[in-house]
Image (cartoon, rainbow, N blue to C red; front, side, top):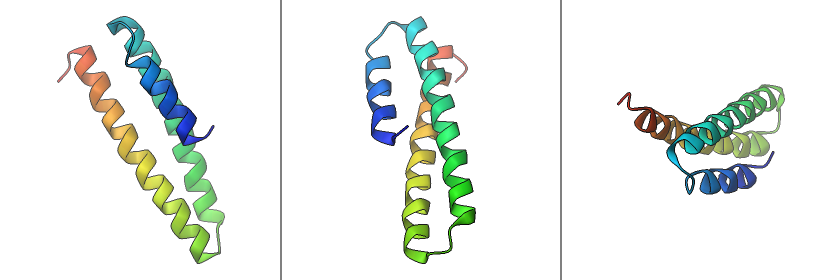
Length: 80
């Protein structure tokens, strides 16, 4: 799943009620984690430096957004 599509799901999820937000956010975070694993495996197999740099950048962006999502889920859950 493309990152832009995941972000669209995230935007829709944030417009819902709290219980629905948590469920939707968990689903989105799972998808982002899958994407992170996929990018890491592609990065390990990649030999081309230019493609490697692109994958590394995508991985960093995905990790940053996932971190923000985890923080948002913690706030919704009342843990932080």
